[in-house]
Amino acid sequence: MSLETRFIRPAMSTTGSPDSFPADVTHIVLKRIVLLSLTPPALVFLGNIVNLVNSYVLGITTFDYSVLEACHDVVITLVSLAVAWIVHRRLFSSRTLIHIGLGFCVFAALWFSATECLVVAEYQSDPIRLGLSYFSFSMIWVVFFPAIVPMRSTAAVITIVLAASTSPLMRWLADSSGWVQFSEGSITFVTIAMFFSVVLGVAVSNVVYKLGKSVSEAQEMGSYRLEKNLGSGGMGEVWVARHRMLARSAAVKFIKHEIIAGMDADEIRTLNQRFEHEVQATATLKSPHTVDIYDYGVTPDRTFYYVMELLSGIDMETLVKRFGPIVPERVVYMLTQACHSLHEAHCRQLIHRDVKPANLFVCEYGEDLDFVKVLDFGLVKHDTAGDEADPKLTRDGTITGTPAYMYPEAITGTSPVDHRSDIYSLGCVAYWLLTGELVFTGRTPMALLAEHANAQPIPPSQRSELEIPEALDEVVLACLAKDPADRPDGAEELAGRLERIRFETPWDNARARTWWELHRVN
Image (cartoon, rainbow, N blue to C red; front, side, top):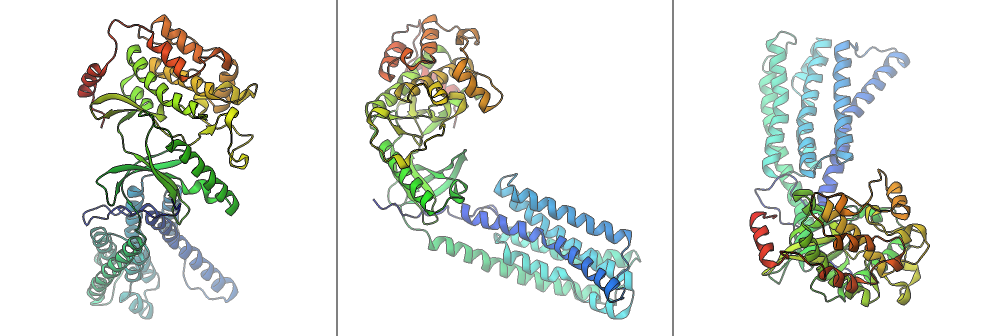
């Protein structure tokens, strides 16, 4: 299969929000908003430089800089820099940031209009008054801004009309208050001129928006159309996607662009090879409790992705955060299924290396409830005993995984990382499910790693209000043994030990159905 492919981007409906662009187009829009928000401060700075040069070099006094003008410029500078910083740092959702940008367009137009009134009030002389009476920089701004920042038609009309109205409104208020006296008919002229600017601005916005849409559609080839963003994490983001030919939804996970932004060509090629190796290894797994991989590849803009089955349910981290600790019989029911997936992987000399609640998904799977799927074998590695992978594709000298679920041998280096490392992490997952707490509570990643390497865990029964059987306590603590030799030898052995624990009312599909009917999670 060729690695290079393209996605069909999310459809942009006519009723959508102003941020209903593909992710790459939205990124460009936000960068342009940052640059445009720096325009007023740049004009303020340039104007002051010109005044200083005229006053101290040429001996010409062009403008008497009063306290009012100084406050006026300070306000626009602070607001502009704040908007630039907020948008640049992506402090809010793309939708909110774009709305902030549109609001700034109106605010900047108001500043232009107020500046013109201040200048006319300062000079009160016919040549300057006549010039500024029949012209407003807002005319340029309401055409320039939508030409740079693509906007949907509704958002464009609202933003441009509000921005254009600032000039005649400010002049009317200034003239009515007696602060500035504009030439007869100038306000009417400016109003008419702003009307034509609005028409031109809306037309330009529509053209720019359609051009951006056409460029995106010109890149739309391949099999998958991205429809909805499901969320993002440290390494990537996940989208709901639909196959172009098949009536089948899928989940597409991207490796974030910033992960590879600082890499050179050789590093990107090595990461590409490692990614391909890992996904191919995962795709060989046939356990129904391992997420199915449909496709994978690299887009022309070097975005790594893979396509997997779309699941309906909730991950175990969110499950506990939302509903609290899980009853022991249900924990055993779910972990036994996870063992099924891990056992097959271990038999194929593959270790997961990032077993954690967020990577264990509890779902509705046909008629089965509480059906567990193991996700994200993105850190998968061949077991030491059977490693045939290219050594250049591994990450020597680094600790890979999540600190709260890290196996001691990866920290201390006293023994090799193997399938029993996944057993330790699964023990940490069991602890989380039973208690709603992490095994160790270090406040920093380094503190957590130190505790996993040296500290002895408190039995889960002592940290939970639930009645946890002694046998389950023993199994969890065995999984958390510092020495891999003291842990269950594999996922199959662990599953057997879990299945031998007896409960008065075992968890089954019927009890799971009752729970799901009461707690619908989607």
